[in-house]
Length: 235
Length: 235
DNA sequence: AGGTGTGAACACTTTCACAGCA
DNA sequence: TGCTGTGAAAGTGTTCACACCT
Image (cartoon, rainbow over all chains, first blue to last red; front, side, top):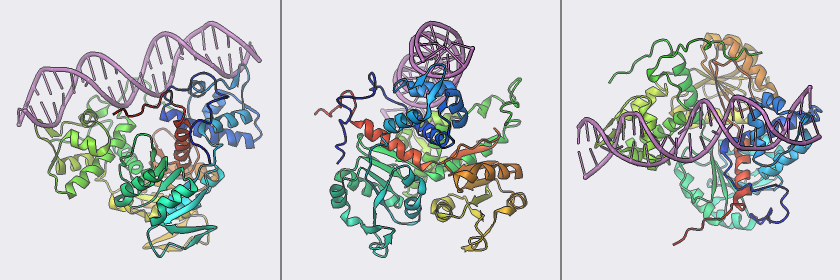
């Protein structure tokens, strides 16, 4: 199912060439706007100005408008954006209409937390395949999903046409498992292992590295006090 | 609310030297270099050139040198960097010499995964306070740490001089809990709730939003087929 | 030679400011 | 009138290229 490419070839609802590269920050903001807009929708707000949206999303009105402008013009001058319509537009831009087939590899602590993570489900990412190496885990049921043997990875990816793999294995295993997944046809990887994966260019990769986030905090806290007198570090 | 910037109005109190703003990407790369260098150290490599480091970290040699140049000159021309010394330098830059007091708020599935997350410990971030609202959880022991009542948050933060809070509570609670933590003296927050926190400027904040990462993947996969010309690798 | 440190060039992102439309 | 959409300006981050040191 979902023949990857060329779903927009013919009658694309998108206007002119969207072929220019969209920056990662723009994409992340779109995801953010989407969440904000869904909340506004629930609160019964029918329209939203770029200014209102910016306030809720922690950015600026100009940024909001520029972000949307890469994909078309969705607003009404003098009025703002129709919340429900904009939700649909962003979902379409992000490809959330597609029911991606997602597999989780690694049924350890992080894996299980991710599996249960309510926000994946509510946003349409259903994990219906879980793999692990540990014989103690293989065969165990998580809800309606049974943990399967990672040795079956290739067959499973092919048969179920897995698009995205969530990688929650130890760093030492990450590259090898990723290679196998890619070889079998996976197109995107969400990597939780603290390891720099080397992948073919056409494979989409997102890393989540929580240590990096904590170390960024540490850096900021360390710097905060250094304004008046730099605590010099001599050689 | 939040009287934005009123601290830097007149002349900048910041000194020249090392006080220029360091970009977030630089900080994240430093964290990455550190991990790579530690691995090289274990492998017995005594020196590393910017080129070798770049290869392992997935960036460029010029980028590596520029990143370091913001903090000093740590290399030897013609030779490269002394691995052990550079590890020490980066740890110092990131403030990893400091034993930050970290509290985890939210002992649910994500919270427990984070608590057990080996990489926090091995990198020196010890979580020795865990709080939750749920009476079923309060009093339970996780290793040597006993889950405490979140109603005690203010007292605990003050008494234990908590620097950093890892926020793993539902989005609906996140802002309120963050406000209390900040009020009690916390200086940095690692936020796992999919909620845009509004905090005073001097509080360091890092967000981890896994849905956003998955949606970025979805966007890339959706766009993949739409490239103007697939640059096939010519022989 | 070999590889760092860094100003200058380049590329990319954000902000400004205003024309244009509902 | 009010707010979008967008070129142009300003600001940031990355890459280049080479002087300089070991």
